[in-house]
Image (cartoon, rainbow, N blue to C red; front, side, top):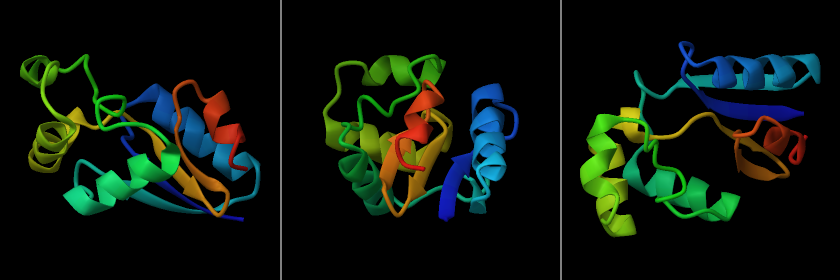
Length: 111
């Protein structure tokens, strides 16, 4: 199985998701999204495939997210593309789909 994870190595949930993928024997492509952020269109496509809105993918714990709490999905995507710390993590993609790995059990749905 092949998998791609948009990963933040400083995040324990992201590290746990990566460990789960490796334990399951996945051939994992790791994208440290803070260093290599997804393009706006790619992010929109990932959320659509996951069945979530950009608002659901917004890392609301970040101070930078506060002005976006009532923003449109387009404004949220623009902000995420400009400042990837706003992207909730981890995002995981396999042939079975895309999931935001919070809680980590969501990743199991696509293994």
